[in-house]
Length: 238
Image (tube, rainbow, N blue to C red; front, side):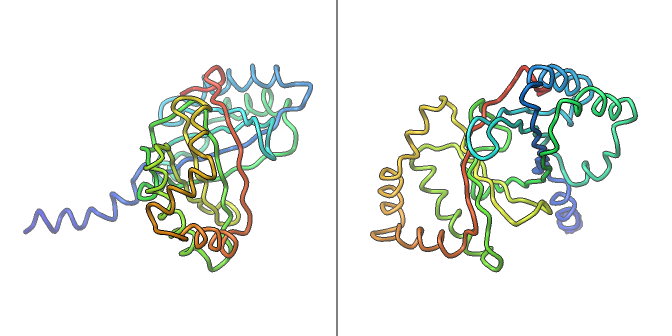
């Protein structure tokens, strides 16, 4: 009985310490300084961002942020992030002196938590080519958005799609990032064919169910967009 009580007491701690948080920065190099930026950011991350703070750097090749770079660290727990502190003066000076001089003023920072129950692939099962579809949720429609994604999961699985879903956390408007990982390269995008998707959706959820899906999209999604990203191993420290 004592052992059971001890485990129950530890459940909240496990939840808090779960390593399911990805921190993401998006930066944009000056158009005439791309090569200089890539050299500088590669040197910076491989020197100062190692171990649990290693980073995967992606080049954004399509969508509204095309030409930018996504720098992702983690997964980590909130507890780890909270105790991180700064990385020291040497790190900050190197970033400001050797990297930011090649950047534009455009950029963003965000946190996302991995949603295991509506994903089809493990958080750490990475791939070199991915797409991200961003779903910004209307206020008061959080449950509808969750249900929509929950209904998509068996469809993704039936189509053989590797999908990791992240919920934004204190990072602007509430949104989900649906990350499709192309394990065989971009040829896997054939699995995203709209007719194939609709057919599989109705095979799982019943005739005319796709209409309900599109109605939920119209009523509960404020905005959505998609993009393709390529992993840049040469720039990354992970």
